[in-house]
Length: 280
Image 1 (cartoon, rainbow, N blue to C red):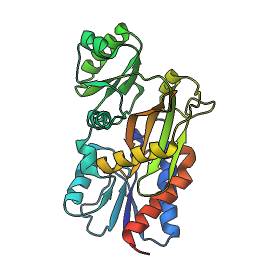
Image 2: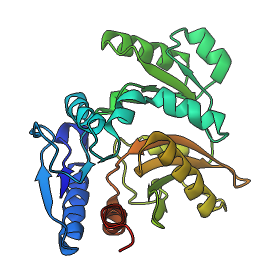
Image 3: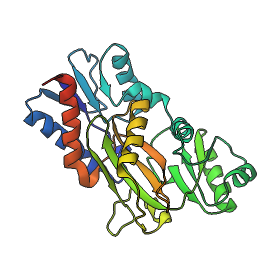
Image 4: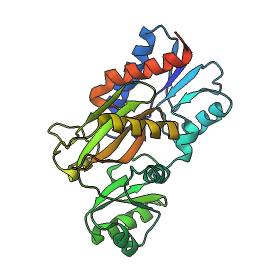
């Protein structure tokens, strides 16, 4: 039996329909394979998960993830791992990416504008580190010191104490989507005409020059991050430099997938069935 947990709409800013689509498409893909399935709202989690052979969770609230982490600790297999999601912030992910040679320079919880400017220069980004962005104000492009001071003041006023400030990297912005352990991997250029944008921030990288790069190398790197962070169902953003080098600037738990929803759902179902029916 698979439990499939939906995402509350407050964690799907401007992506409610897209998140609903991947949820329903995964459910259909599993049902067509004859796998018993229970669909559950993240705000109505059961007290007992002993009937689940596998839990596929899109949940984002801390309450839901805490409940799921308790079930995981008791032996339930859950993708993506709630205990990892509770533990790993943007700062932790950024640290690992930098240590692996694929991240952007950043500072964690540094609120001195002079130190930030001296270390990273402008432009740069400020992002809350403790959760996925729910509003446009949680992730901001900063062009100069005045904007930086304003953003730091806004974060302080909102009680946001856990944040990162990262360097802005020039190059092609690529959004990527994958399911670790399967061949599935897709990438798009969001700044192309009609490209999807959650908050409109992608415009700061401009129209893509479509620099040549190794898609297989990007998948290999993203899959390695997925294994390290216990997030087999993932998405993220990368910057492609003119020489083909790439840097991951964001790595996310279970994205909306968008135009590759069908292929992603089939990959998620395939991975789940291989887990439940090894050797089949």
